Image (cartoon, rainbow, N blue to C red; front, side):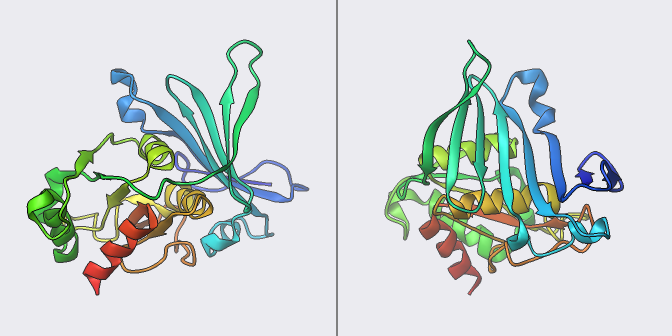
Length: 240
């Protein structure tokens, strides 16, 4: 019934008799097209309400489907219907999506973290402290070495973490316009958080679980931290 896109200001009505509300980021990571980095399409579905905006401005726990397509060496689909995460890959011969994993889970162990370190000076003290301890490696309180990743494509970052674990951080920071984070709740954070939790991971704003929260506006932004459960819990402990 309703279509809300990161590329549109307002909700579009598609079918007055439709039962669903679709939120979509049509081309996530589009700034990477010219360098051939994996990009994708993020989506989620809610039960439609009569009020178009109210169909989306609600707790993210009310999503009934969430997923993404990723366009790279393989075209893949990760999707959850609320009972685990299913991984499909597009077969180039018959152009059909084939199920390759009916119950994907995030690996419990990883030594990778993803964050844009160029913003270090703008971060809050908890985020700085967490990253400082990672960078200290086996000489620091974590007593092990880490690798840093940053693709600047949320779909690519998510796909890596679902495949081999780790943590992604896009926190709020002190720059104008970034005080409440940078990623959009409706089109990016809510669907990714549902996928991650269904795969056995966690997604937060830093101190708080993300899924119970709701956007106040269609394009409202929120901090996003997600990945392997113990790593996300550790970040929350830094806020405590």
